[in-house]
Length: 161
Image (cartoon, rainbow, N blue to C red; front, side, top):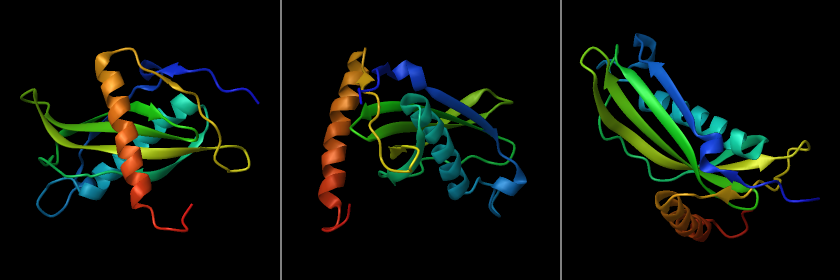
């Protein structure tokens, strides 16, 4: 079976926008961290599926810390891009910003690197397209992704696949 054709970062770049409703928020009026995480997972999964052309599953999320909250009535912007493609897995960077649309202000909310595995029709890991990096920033992110991957693999428990 031949290797899938390489794809640039721009091929799968994904954005989402969500309006924060009361059902998304805690008693303080701030969006639940779990809701932000669910939106991040969805945005990253769409990005990963665009790159691989396959169904993907979330394999991991690197360090995640919330910088600022987003309140009911404000907007959440998410951006996801592939930072590295390995044999069957890929790393996606997700950046989340809050926005007060009435004042036009935006702020960083949270960011994370998420790892996904592509599955074939039998739901087994399958080979994915290589990533084409075209800018210095994309190349640096890919290099750093290799380092993060080595650290993730080193943390795995013995006997785990």
